[in-house]
Length: 303
Length: 215
Image 1 (tube, helix red, strand yellow):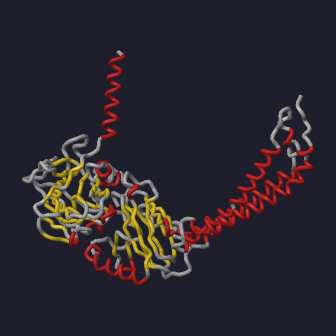
Image 2 (cartoon, each protein chain N blue to C red):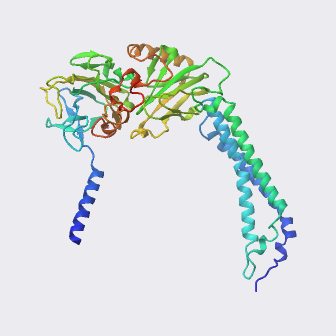
């Protein structure tokens, strides 16, 4: 016959005496873990600090990662204690150890409150840090509602097509380049569009990510604050060469940028004259370029 | 009965494995009379005329025996000058983005159309641009002017011959370190496919391939 009564060492009274010790262990381990995450791991978390938006994203990840050790150690410590102390012994009723917790309204209430507060806090935190840094580097569509405080921005148009990105510079005579250089300490507005299928402009170290849709201008903002190289990748599966659709860009000093832009403007002057007038979107079939390749049912074919 | 099934199964397996393992051949650049310089000769056919997709547009590369092999995988020596001669037999149209009119990444930033040098080719004049040779990682872009598709000596199926209407484009590049570099055409020439970018545009051996630069 099984035992329904637990021995004294596992009584409710004995457990209550252990709880303060467990909480002390939890606080110490959580503190050590969180400090390690914040100060040791934190500065190395992606996407770095090349722009204001990237630094913001890194702060978000760093902060949320710092919350992980308390949760993790809470589960590990109490799980470990339970495994050792509350393990069912031969002849015991397997349900007996849980009997004192079943229907315990304080435990249930604490669980509901703690998890609800945690989830709502994270939702508010995420929303705040999406809105305040001008959309946090994400594409906001043609009419962005979260904009930087200044109107003095460098305009960079990102034009995607199967399978390369090119960049157009309306403030530099509308020239178009296959490389991208950005000046440091500058507010930048990316206008992202596509000439064919859906692509995605993901400038990883800049903390910028915006879908490139045909006939749509998708606006994203960032502010450069650190020199260095960044990677641009397409992040929407756009065909067989999708994996090869990437290039590298550079954040350089303002003087170096001016020198580069001036040189590119002169070098590309002849072809700039052949480009269509600068616009936020381009539909190749409108201009007839490649028009013969559009099927008759293409809604753009007759425009 | 069992033997027949086994034979059929073997044929299916052979076909599937063969299809999976099939890849266009690699053709090496040919030595030239100038030390340190190698030659690559290409032709572009509006319809390759052979293989599983005879109606697809495609490139051919000339091998050491002078044969035109349908492929887009070319082996080049590292740190060398490479002289390209391209015989362009196809008619032309426009780029989806005219920025590809620019000649880039070649020696001197120039290409020669029938012997005449140019730093860009306007895709909206004449017969437009037939095809292009673009190597993103090396910054190379060369557009190839199209020919009159209504001409009586227009080449309808490859391999085309010198007596048929063509443009000859030449340019030089200098290779760097070894590596495999993808290249593609930027004219949307995949007729009948979405945005003109399917079919031959997405198949190695037709309008895209690799430059294999070896030590």
